[in-house]
Amino acid sequence: MTETTTNPARGTDHISLTVNGEERTVERGTTVAGLLEELELEPRTVVVERNREIIPRDDYGEVTLQDDDTLELVHFVGGG
Amino acid sequence: MTTSTEQAGSGLDDGPLTIGGRDFESRLIVGTGKYPDNETMVGAIRASGAEMVTVAVRRVDLDRSSEEGILHHLDPDEFFLLANTAGCYTAEDAVRYARLARAAGFNEWIKLEVIGDEKTLLPDVQATLEAARILVEEDFKVMAYTNDDLVSALRLEDAGCVSVMPLASPIGSGLGLVNPYYIREIKDRLEVPVIVDAGVGTASDACATMEQGVDGVLMNTAIAAADDPVSMARAMRLSVQAGRLAYLAGRMPRREIAVPSSPVRGMLD
Image (cartoon, rainbow over all chains, first blue to last red; front, side, top):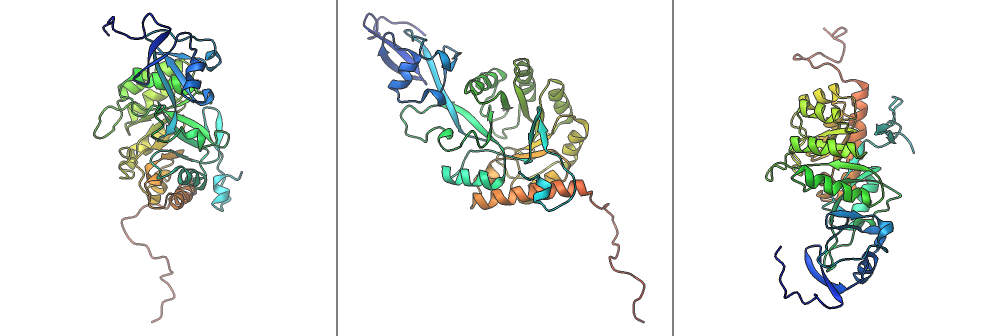
């Protein structure tokens, strides 16, 4: 991905993330738990992958998101 | 809970289905996809008597325009969840999905499925084997979906899969058991449980599959896409039991000639 200097989040107190393929801006210092709360998702039903690494559920409150993080939030759906 | 043969009203001894050290009374495993609504899904799964149910791993819909996660409807204390890697086309993707599924925190079991062809959804056996080896190394209990090829099944068993799951016919096709001979051959040669996964269309297919002596059947669309899924689920439960019982009972030999059932002596002049 090519970095540009036009990212509105840079130099501010916000960072930008890619969450499930969509760009999203959150406050700098937001933890995984904070993001889930913002998205109104129950932490116990969601698995979080950050930059291709799974974050253990017990660490959601401790892991602080960084600018340009790519997150995948997944859960179980019907399937065969 | 009664055993499946007791439910079928027989005195024939049939132990539980044991996979990876865990006992299941039901030899029917069902999927949770494609139901018209969640209430029908739960009703059908209960009617099927299945203890193990499959689920898929997908992105949470952040717009909430589609339904919520399945665990809002399906109690994980009531059913044993078997997550799948459906939709994966590479070993790398399948391993990624399996790890995400395990991180959900229910169990370390995975229904490994690596698709090799979009049109037929037939498995990529080489990639499946590659993923199976990685996952077994990571202490997953792998139930591997594969084609009806004996050598592939043997390799997956050698790789450490707790169950090998050859197809009856392509996923979602409802074509039934197209190659009973190959399925019997696989069952004959493998020590791990053989579960026939995919292709069953109706109750007679499930029965015929179980009559080959396999350990169980896994199905989704045959129940979910029936006009009345709850009734079809019950039919499948009974047919899996009937097929198992018929297998244990031992069928009569096939003959190319007719043999009368009634005495030939004692006929009137």
